[in-house]
Image (cartoon, rainbow, N blue to C red; front, side, top):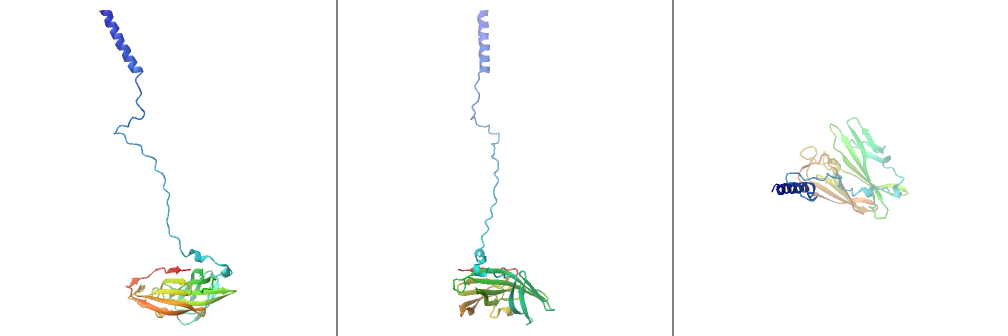
Length: 246
């Protein structure tokens, strides 16, 4: 009886040792305990992309071969009659011209130059925009002087037009250029833009004037002008819209 008991105990010890030495490893795909946070992937750097709209007029700033010899930043634009009725020689140097008559000052700046065929002769003309600011007690916010040039060897001015100012009325709202027609849109009632159009305050202007100029005899002449109602708005620092249709 005693020998049998010892044999049984030895068997139990052997089974326990076997179980400890040869127990199976847990499967590698065993799910994580629910109280353990799941690992998160490393954050990937995000590229910053700016979807800025392209300037539709950029292609019209490319200088064509027939204007390659013309420097509009350093050029004489002929005689200009000032507000005080004094004729000055408008000569830009590095795109600037400053003038003072003792009662105030004024300056011209080359704002932009575009090239497109506006006469229908299959050769591009140059459309030059100058900003013109006049100051007395205060400054007028600037008018826009628009000039069109053609070239067949020599450079010839075929159109010149100046709007009123943003502060005193008839400042340029938009300019549309197409073959044989130029449309100028101004703030205010502007049968004579240089006289301006007084609103309820400085830079406050109502109504809109649209003037159409068509090619006639090699020059652009005014064909019609219409005035449209528009509520009074603040046009300080307004940037004119330029539309070129080729």
